[in-house]
Length: 312
Ligand code: GYE
Image (cartoon, rainbow, N blue to C red; front, side, top):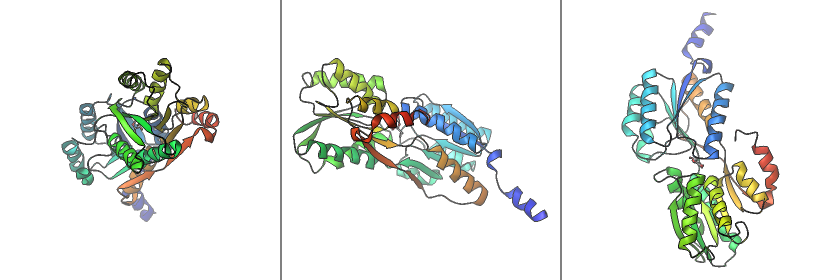
C-alpha cells in the first residue's frame, strides 16, 4: 500500500548501509579479535563495512575519517588511539551529518557532542578490580608492584592506571615501584619487563606485575622466565583483556588473573546506528560492556578452548 511504501522509504535499512571503521591497528590479540568480530557482526546485518587500519597512528585515523566523509558513508566507527586531537575532524563528520560511534576507547569529555555514542567497557573499574584482587591475594604482606602501561595518551591506559591506584589505595603494603608504557604489545611488554628486572637487581623484590593488557603480560612472563623468576608463583600477575593465551599461561600456573572485556563492541554499535537511522532513536551517550575477573580457579583451560571460537 501507499502507506507502507511511505514508511519503507523513510527508514534507512541495514542492508543499504555502508559504515566505515577507523581501526587502530593490530597491536594486541584483543584488537585482532575485535576486527574479526566486527566484520562478522556487519555481515550478520548485511552492512557494507570498510575497515581502515591506522597502524597505531592518529594521523592515519584522521585521514581515514576524512576519506569516509568524502565517500558519504552512513556512519563512522572510530577506535581512538589517543584521547585528544579529534575536534576538527569530528566536526567535519558532524557537518556532513555522519554519526560517529566510538569503539573501545574514549575521547576527552570536551568532545562529547561530536559523537553519537561510545561502546566501551568501564576501564577505571577494570583497573580497580585488578588492584583489589592483588590487595586481597597478598593479604597484608608487603608487595612491590611493577606496572606495564598501555599506549601513552590512550583513555584506557589513563583509566586502567587510575583504577588500579584506586584499588590499592587503602593498602599501604602494596606499592607501585616502577611504571612504564609497553604500548599494549607483547614485544614491548617483554622489553620493558627486562629493564624492570635489571633495575630491580634481578627482580627478587618484585612481588607482582600489573599490565594494562594480556599481551604485554605474555611478553613479561617470557622475560621473567628468561631471568629465572617464576611468574604465577614467586611473582603474581594480573592483567586485562582475557585473550586465549593468558588462559594458557594461567593453566600452566604462570599467570594469576585477568579482567575480561568483550571484543564485540561493534554489535551494539551497529544496533545503535540502525535504530538511530531507522527510527531516530538516540542512544545513551555510553553503551557499557561487561567486565569480569578470571583467576586460576576458573578452569582456565576450558575458557581457553571456548575463546578460540570467538574471533581470536
Ligand atoms: O585492552 C588492548 C588494546 O582499547 C580496549 O586496546 C582496548 C585495548 C585493549 O590494545 O589490548
